[in-house]
Each structure stands twice: as C-alpha cells, then as structure tokens.
Amino acid sequence: MITQTLWVDDEYIYKNFPLPKRLDRGVVYSIIQMEQFTSIQDNLGTCLYEHLEDEVAAETLSATEQELFKLLQYSLAMYSANGIISFLRTQFGATRIEERQLDQSSLDAISNGLEAKINYVNKRIQDFIKNDATIYAIATDASCTGDFFSEEETYQGSLFYPADGKVDIDCNNLDWPE
Image 1 (cartoon, one colour):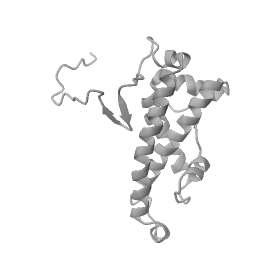
Image 2: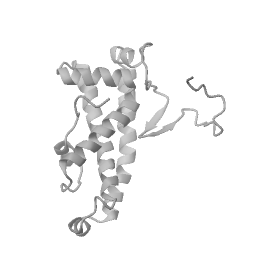
Image 3: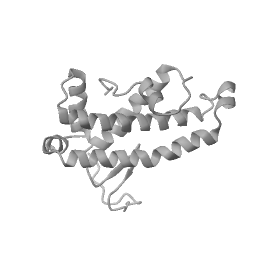
C-alpha cells in the first residue's frame, strides 16, 4: 500500500537538519515515503498508522491526535534525514561540488547524533500512546492485522529487537503460515 499523504516534506527536513539541499525532490520524497510506511508504521502498528493516515487525509485529527502527529512528524524527519545521509554516501549521491562542501565526517556526526534522538522521540511516542485511552484502544484493537503496537518491543527501521533480547537463531518453534 502506498501512503495516502506524506507527513513531512523536504522543506520540513531541511529546516530541522543541516543537510545539503542539492538532492532532487523526487529522491527526498521517496525516502520520506519509505520511512513513513516502514519505520513509522512499525512504531505505531498498522491499525493506529492507518487510522492516523485516514484522519490526516481527511484533515480531521482530534486535538490529542494532533499532539501525537507532531511527535510523529519529528520522528519521520529524523528517519528521513538518516535515509538521506545514507543516500549521500552512495556513488549516486556524491558529486564533486558536494565533496568539497560536506565531508563524510560531517555526515557521520549528524547521523550518529540522530540515532539517540530517534530513540528518545520514539519512546515519547510510545508513552503518549499508552497514556491516552482512545489512541491506545485504536493501537491495540483485537481486530488489528499486520504490525502490532507493542510498548515493549523496539523497532528500528527494518530491524526487530525482541523485548526480552532473546532471538531464536535456529528459527525453532516458529508458527509459519500455511
């Protein structure tokens, strides 16, 4: 499923992070869309993500949902900035002008600083969801399918870390769908 709306744009990212503005808007929007659909949905769970996406598209967010949405925008901007930095490090993202203006250590400093900030904001998002009965009910609805909201499990991009820290390396005891 493609996202209905993008929750931030390139100007929001450039306003909040010292990144070079030379990337094509299409590249930046692709990164934002990917991060919104993967990282943000992983943090919220499918039900709450789809609910908020519908409310944003209809412009009917409640006051409480607007507060949550502001945190989500900042989290999405940080995920996207990290994605942009990863892209800039590739051969596709490098140019002679860029190499003269911004070196790899500058990108590393920004990227390393973002990791802790992303975790902090995501923890605030989880606490916000748990402390609002209406939003928590949407996130944990028994009819939800797909990714589930869990305040105990941490998702960081496409990596999943179980709350107990134990991973079954042999993939034993897994219930695979028939």
